Length: 336
Image 1 (spheres, rainbow, N blue to C red):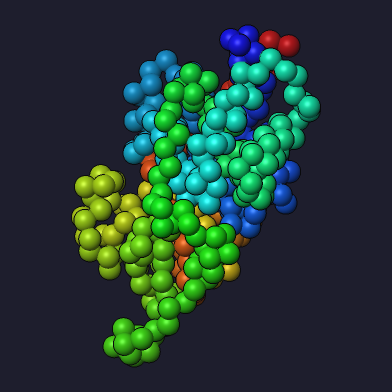
Image 2: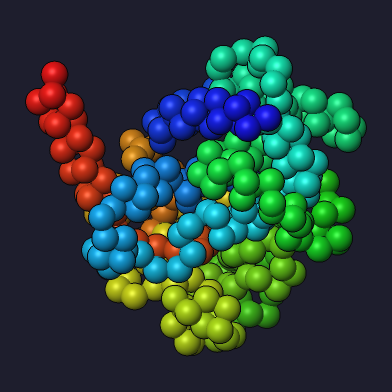
Protein backbone atom coordinates (compact mmCIF):
# COMPACT_ATOMS: atom_id res chain seq x y z
CA UNK A 1 0.00 0.00 0.00
CA UNK A 2 2.79 2.41 0.81
CA UNK A 3 4.38 1.80 -2.58
CA UNK A 4 1.06 2.35 -4.37
CA UNK A 5 0.50 5.55 -2.42
CA UNK A 6 4.01 6.77 -3.20
CA UNK A 7 3.59 6.08 -6.91
CA UNK A 8 0.31 7.96 -7.00
CA UNK A 9 1.82 10.86 -5.04
CA UNK A 10 4.64 11.06 -7.58
CA UNK A 11 2.08 11.10 -10.38
CA UNK A 12 0.12 13.92 -8.73
CA UNK A 13 3.29 15.89 -8.02
CA UNK A 14 4.10 15.92 -11.73
CA UNK A 15 1.19 18.36 -12.09
CA UNK A 16 1.79 22.07 -11.52
CA UNK A 17 -0.74 24.90 -11.59
CA UNK A 18 -0.73 25.11 -15.39
CA UNK A 19 -1.40 21.38 -15.76
CA UNK A 20 -4.11 21.56 -13.14
CA UNK A 21 -5.76 24.42 -14.98
CA UNK A 22 -5.78 22.26 -18.10
CA UNK A 23 -7.37 19.44 -16.09
CA UNK A 24 -10.12 21.72 -14.79
CA UNK A 25 -10.70 23.15 -18.26
CA UNK A 26 -11.20 19.58 -19.51
CA UNK A 27 -13.65 18.81 -16.70
CA UNK A 28 -15.70 22.04 -16.77
CA UNK A 29 -18.25 20.76 -19.33
CA UNK A 30 -19.10 17.83 -17.02
CA UNK A 31 -19.25 19.88 -13.81
CA UNK A 32 -22.77 21.00 -12.88
CA UNK A 33 -23.42 24.72 -13.34
CA UNK A 34 -23.84 25.13 -9.59
CA UNK A 35 -20.16 24.22 -9.06
CA UNK A 36 -18.52 25.30 -12.30
CA UNK A 37 -17.27 28.67 -11.06
CA UNK A 38 -16.84 27.39 -7.50
CA UNK A 39 -14.31 24.79 -8.65
CA UNK A 40 -12.32 27.42 -10.55
CA UNK A 41 -12.41 29.75 -7.56
CA UNK A 42 -11.13 27.03 -5.24
CA UNK A 43 -8.24 26.30 -7.60
CA UNK A 44 -7.25 29.99 -7.47
CA UNK A 45 -7.57 30.08 -3.69
CA UNK A 46 -4.97 27.32 -3.17
CA UNK A 47 -2.19 27.60 -5.78
CA UNK A 48 0.46 24.91 -5.82
CA UNK A 49 3.16 27.42 -6.72
CA UNK A 50 2.76 29.24 -3.41
CA UNK A 51 2.93 26.01 -1.41
CA UNK A 52 6.06 24.89 -3.27
CA UNK A 53 7.72 28.27 -2.72
CA UNK A 54 7.15 27.93 1.02
CA UNK A 55 8.40 24.33 1.01
CA UNK A 56 11.58 25.28 -0.86
CA UNK A 57 12.35 28.44 1.14
CA UNK A 58 15.50 28.50 3.27
CA UNK A 59 13.80 30.92 5.65
CA UNK A 60 10.03 30.35 5.63
CA UNK A 61 9.21 33.17 8.06
CA UNK A 62 11.20 35.65 5.99
CA UNK A 63 9.37 34.57 2.85
CA UNK A 64 5.99 34.87 4.58
CA UNK A 65 6.87 38.44 5.54
CA UNK A 66 8.17 39.23 2.06
CA UNK A 67 5.00 37.96 0.43
CA UNK A 68 2.86 39.71 3.09
CA UNK A 69 0.87 36.55 3.71
CA UNK A 70 -1.97 36.93 6.20
CA UNK A 71 -4.65 34.49 7.31
CA UNK A 72 -4.99 30.74 6.70
CA UNK A 73 -3.08 30.08 3.48
CA UNK A 74 -2.08 26.47 4.19
CA UNK A 75 -4.52 23.90 2.86
CA UNK A 76 -3.38 21.30 5.39
CA UNK A 77 -5.03 23.40 8.11
CA UNK A 78 -8.45 23.27 6.40
CA UNK A 79 -8.69 19.96 4.55
CA UNK A 80 -12.38 19.50 5.31
CA UNK A 81 -13.47 23.16 5.32
CA UNK A 82 -11.72 24.87 2.40
CA UNK A 83 -14.40 23.89 -0.10
CA UNK A 84 -17.50 24.69 1.96
CA UNK A 85 -18.78 26.93 -0.85
CA UNK A 86 -18.99 24.08 -3.37
CA UNK A 87 -22.38 22.44 -3.67
CA UNK A 88 -20.51 19.13 -3.83
CA UNK A 89 -19.12 19.78 -0.34
CA UNK A 90 -22.17 17.99 1.08
CA UNK A 91 -20.80 14.77 -0.46
CA UNK A 92 -17.27 15.32 0.86
CA UNK A 93 -17.16 12.32 3.21
CA UNK A 94 -17.99 9.86 0.42
CA UNK A 95 -15.65 11.56 -2.06
CA UNK A 96 -12.77 11.70 0.43
CA UNK A 97 -13.15 8.00 1.20
CA UNK A 98 -13.17 7.10 -2.50
CA UNK A 99 -10.14 9.25 -3.33
CA UNK A 100 -8.19 7.76 -0.43
CA UNK A 101 -8.99 4.24 -1.64
CA UNK A 102 -8.01 5.20 -5.19
CA UNK A 103 -4.68 6.65 -4.06
CA UNK A 104 -3.80 3.53 -2.04
CA UNK A 105 -5.04 0.98 -4.57
CA UNK A 106 -2.53 -1.38 -6.14
CA UNK A 107 -4.72 -1.72 -9.24
CA UNK A 108 -3.64 0.11 -12.36
CA UNK A 109 -5.89 3.06 -13.23
CA UNK A 110 -7.96 2.90 -16.39
CA UNK A 111 -6.26 6.05 -17.70
CA UNK A 112 -2.97 7.88 -17.17
CA UNK A 113 -4.77 11.20 -17.62
CA UNK A 114 -5.61 12.96 -14.34
CA UNK A 115 -8.89 14.39 -15.67
CA UNK A 116 -10.06 10.90 -16.61
CA UNK A 117 -9.08 9.52 -13.19
CA UNK A 118 -11.04 12.27 -11.45
CA UNK A 119 -14.06 11.54 -13.61
CA UNK A 120 -13.81 7.79 -12.95
CA UNK A 121 -13.81 8.34 -9.18
CA UNK A 122 -16.69 10.83 -9.42
CA UNK A 123 -18.70 8.36 -11.49
CA UNK A 124 -18.04 5.56 -9.00
CA UNK A 125 -19.15 7.67 -6.04
CA UNK A 126 -22.21 8.88 -7.95
CA UNK A 127 -23.26 5.29 -8.60
CA UNK A 128 -22.69 4.33 -4.97
CA UNK A 129 -24.63 7.18 -3.36
CA UNK A 130 -27.15 7.65 -6.19
CA UNK A 131 -26.26 11.24 -7.08
CA UNK A 132 -25.78 12.91 -10.45
CA UNK A 133 -22.07 12.63 -11.30
CA UNK A 134 -21.95 16.25 -12.47
CA UNK A 135 -22.49 17.28 -8.84
CA UNK A 136 -19.45 15.26 -7.76
CA UNK A 137 -16.87 16.05 -10.45
CA UNK A 138 -15.85 19.44 -9.03
CA UNK A 139 -15.49 18.29 -5.42
CA UNK A 140 -13.60 15.19 -6.59
CA UNK A 141 -11.11 17.39 -8.45
CA UNK A 142 -10.74 19.44 -5.26
CA UNK A 143 -10.08 16.22 -3.32
CA UNK A 144 -7.30 15.16 -5.71
CA UNK A 145 -5.64 18.58 -5.50
CA UNK A 146 -5.98 18.60 -1.71
CA UNK A 147 -4.37 15.16 -1.55
CA UNK A 148 -1.47 16.41 -3.65
CA UNK A 149 -0.86 19.39 -1.37
CA UNK A 150 -1.25 17.77 2.04
CA UNK A 151 -0.11 14.17 1.43
CA UNK A 152 -1.94 10.90 1.94
CA UNK A 153 -1.42 10.68 5.71
CA UNK A 154 -2.95 14.08 6.48
CA UNK A 155 -5.66 13.59 3.89
CA UNK A 156 -6.68 10.19 5.24
CA UNK A 157 -6.55 11.41 8.85
CA UNK A 158 -8.97 14.30 8.25
CA UNK A 159 -12.39 13.62 9.74
CA UNK A 160 -14.39 14.28 6.57
CA UNK A 161 -16.65 16.68 8.46
CA UNK A 162 -19.28 18.57 6.46
CA UNK A 163 -19.24 22.31 7.21
CA UNK A 164 -22.83 23.20 6.28
CA UNK A 165 -26.13 22.91 8.13
CA UNK A 166 -28.77 20.27 7.40
CA UNK A 167 -31.03 23.01 6.06
CA UNK A 168 -28.42 24.15 3.55
CA UNK A 169 -27.55 20.55 2.66
CA UNK A 170 -31.19 19.86 1.77
CA UNK A 171 -31.26 22.46 -1.02
CA UNK A 172 -31.27 21.29 -4.61
CA UNK A 173 -28.78 22.71 -7.15
CA UNK A 174 -31.67 24.49 -8.86
CA UNK A 175 -32.69 26.16 -5.61
CA UNK A 176 -29.14 27.40 -5.06
CA UNK A 177 -28.92 28.80 -8.59
CA UNK A 178 -32.28 30.56 -8.21
CA UNK A 179 -31.18 32.01 -4.89
CA UNK A 180 -28.03 33.45 -6.47
CA UNK A 181 -30.09 35.20 -9.14
CA UNK A 182 -32.85 36.40 -6.80
CA UNK A 183 -33.43 40.14 -6.49
CA UNK A 184 -35.49 40.78 -3.32
CA UNK A 185 -36.64 44.16 -4.64
CA UNK A 186 -36.06 47.67 -3.31
CA UNK A 187 -38.78 48.00 -0.68
CA UNK A 188 -38.90 50.89 1.79
CA UNK A 189 -35.10 50.92 2.02
CA UNK A 190 -34.93 51.97 -1.63
CA UNK A 191 -37.60 54.66 -1.11
CA UNK A 192 -35.54 56.28 1.64
CA UNK A 193 -32.69 56.68 -0.81
CA UNK A 194 -34.62 58.40 -3.59
CA UNK A 195 -35.35 55.10 -5.32
CA UNK A 196 -31.71 54.30 -5.86
CA UNK A 197 -31.53 50.64 -6.72
CA UNK A 198 -30.19 48.34 -4.01
CA UNK A 199 -28.93 44.83 -4.54
CA UNK A 200 -28.23 41.93 -2.24
CA UNK A 201 -24.60 40.84 -2.00
CA UNK A 202 -24.19 37.40 -0.40
CA UNK A 203 -20.79 36.54 1.04
CA UNK A 204 -21.54 33.11 2.49
CA UNK A 205 -24.37 31.04 1.02
CA UNK A 206 -24.27 28.69 4.00
CA UNK A 207 -25.33 31.38 6.50
CA UNK A 208 -28.82 32.84 6.22
CA UNK A 209 -27.99 36.47 7.04
CA UNK A 210 -24.50 36.57 5.48
CA UNK A 211 -25.34 39.40 3.13
CA UNK A 212 -25.30 43.19 2.84
CA UNK A 213 -27.10 45.73 0.61
CA UNK A 214 -25.25 47.56 -2.13
CA UNK A 215 -26.40 50.68 -3.95
CA UNK A 216 -26.26 50.40 -7.73
CA UNK A 217 -22.68 50.88 -9.06
CA UNK A 218 -21.15 50.96 -5.56
CA UNK A 219 -17.94 49.00 -5.11
CA UNK A 220 -18.30 45.79 -3.12
CA UNK A 221 -16.11 47.03 -0.26
CA UNK A 222 -18.17 50.21 0.04
CA UNK A 223 -21.36 48.22 0.34
CA UNK A 224 -19.74 45.80 2.79
CA UNK A 225 -18.75 48.70 5.05
CA UNK A 226 -22.45 49.33 5.79
CA UNK A 227 -22.50 45.98 7.63
CA UNK A 228 -21.37 46.95 11.13
CA UNK A 229 -21.47 43.48 12.67
CA UNK A 230 -18.31 42.16 14.34
CA UNK A 231 -16.25 40.19 11.83
CA UNK A 232 -12.86 40.94 13.35
CA UNK A 233 -13.23 38.22 15.99
CA UNK A 234 -13.93 35.68 13.24
CA UNK A 235 -11.20 36.93 10.90
CA UNK A 236 -8.52 39.28 12.33
CA UNK A 237 -7.91 40.61 8.82
CA UNK A 238 -11.29 42.35 8.95
CA UNK A 239 -11.24 45.92 10.24
CA UNK A 240 -13.82 46.66 12.92
CA UNK A 241 -16.75 48.49 11.38
CA UNK A 242 -15.70 47.82 7.77
CA UNK A 243 -17.78 44.70 7.15
CA UNK A 244 -16.96 41.09 6.24
CA UNK A 245 -14.50 41.77 3.38
CA UNK A 246 -10.93 42.35 4.61
CA UNK A 247 -9.76 45.69 3.19
CA UNK A 248 -6.86 48.07 3.73
CA UNK A 249 -6.26 50.49 0.86
CA UNK A 250 -9.38 50.62 -1.38
CA UNK A 251 -7.09 51.46 -4.33
CA UNK A 252 -5.97 48.01 -5.59
CA UNK A 253 -2.59 48.46 -3.90
CA UNK A 254 -2.71 45.82 -1.16
CA UNK A 255 -4.62 42.82 -2.53
CA UNK A 256 -6.40 42.27 0.77
CA UNK A 257 -9.93 42.41 -0.64
CA UNK A 258 -9.73 39.68 -3.28
CA UNK A 259 -12.91 37.61 -3.64
CA UNK A 260 -14.33 34.89 -5.85
CA UNK A 261 -17.44 35.73 -7.88
CA UNK A 262 -19.59 32.67 -7.31
CA UNK A 263 -22.85 33.91 -8.79
CA UNK A 264 -24.10 37.01 -10.59
CA UNK A 265 -21.00 37.47 -12.71
CA UNK A 266 -23.11 39.20 -15.38
CA UNK A 267 -24.00 41.84 -12.79
CA UNK A 268 -20.45 43.00 -11.98
CA UNK A 269 -18.36 45.56 -13.81
CA UNK A 270 -15.65 44.55 -16.23
CA UNK A 271 -12.06 44.49 -15.00
CA UNK A 272 -10.37 47.82 -15.67
CA UNK A 273 -6.67 47.94 -16.53
CA UNK A 274 -5.47 48.71 -12.98
CA UNK A 275 -7.34 45.78 -11.42
CA UNK A 276 -6.37 43.52 -14.35
CA UNK A 277 -2.65 44.10 -13.80
CA UNK A 278 -2.82 44.08 -10.00
CA UNK A 279 -4.62 40.72 -9.81
CA UNK A 280 -1.75 39.20 -11.78
CA UNK A 281 0.87 40.95 -9.66
CA UNK A 282 -0.74 39.67 -6.48
CA UNK A 283 -0.70 36.17 -7.98
CA UNK A 284 -4.41 35.56 -7.58
CA UNK A 285 -5.17 34.87 -11.22
CA UNK A 286 -3.49 34.82 -14.62
CA UNK A 287 -6.36 35.31 -17.01
CA UNK A 288 -7.14 37.39 -20.06
CA UNK A 289 -10.84 37.51 -19.17
CA UNK A 290 -12.37 40.85 -18.28
CA UNK A 291 -14.95 39.23 -15.99
CA UNK A 292 -12.87 36.50 -14.32
CA UNK A 293 -13.75 34.36 -11.29
CA UNK A 294 -11.37 36.35 -9.03
CA UNK A 295 -11.82 40.08 -8.44
CA UNK A 296 -10.62 42.87 -6.16
CA UNK A 297 -13.70 43.94 -4.22
CA UNK A 298 -12.53 47.56 -3.95
CA UNK A 299 -12.53 47.82 -7.76
CA UNK A 300 -15.69 45.80 -8.50
CA UNK A 301 -19.07 47.46 -8.93
CA UNK A 302 -22.43 45.67 -9.09
CA UNK A 303 -25.67 46.21 -10.99
CA UNK A 304 -27.59 43.26 -9.60
CA UNK A 305 -27.43 40.52 -6.95
CA UNK A 306 -24.03 38.89 -6.56
CA UNK A 307 -22.77 35.94 -4.54
CA UNK A 308 -19.11 36.08 -3.51
CA UNK A 309 -16.63 33.92 -1.63
CA UNK A 310 -14.09 35.54 0.69
CA UNK A 311 -10.79 33.62 0.81
CA UNK A 312 -9.27 33.00 4.25
CA UNK A 313 -5.94 34.65 3.37
CA UNK A 314 -4.25 37.25 1.20
CA UNK A 315 -0.74 38.15 0.06
CA UNK A 316 1.40 39.54 -2.77
CA UNK A 317 3.28 36.72 -4.45
CA UNK A 318 2.68 36.83 -8.22
CA UNK A 319 5.79 38.83 -9.08
CA UNK A 320 7.93 36.71 -6.75
CA UNK A 321 6.71 33.46 -8.28
CA UNK A 322 7.35 34.70 -11.82
CA UNK A 323 10.90 35.73 -10.94
CA UNK A 324 11.45 32.42 -9.15
CA UNK A 325 10.24 30.51 -12.19
CA UNK A 326 12.50 32.52 -14.49
CA UNK A 327 15.49 31.84 -12.22
CA UNK A 328 14.75 28.11 -12.24
CA UNK A 329 14.48 28.15 -16.03
CA UNK A 330 17.83 29.97 -16.35
CA UNK A 331 19.46 27.53 -13.94
CA UNK A 332 18.12 24.54 -15.88
CA UNK A 333 19.30 26.09 -19.15
CA UNK A 334 22.75 26.70 -17.66
CA UNK A 335 23.04 23.08 -16.52
CA UNK A 336 22.17 21.89 -20.02
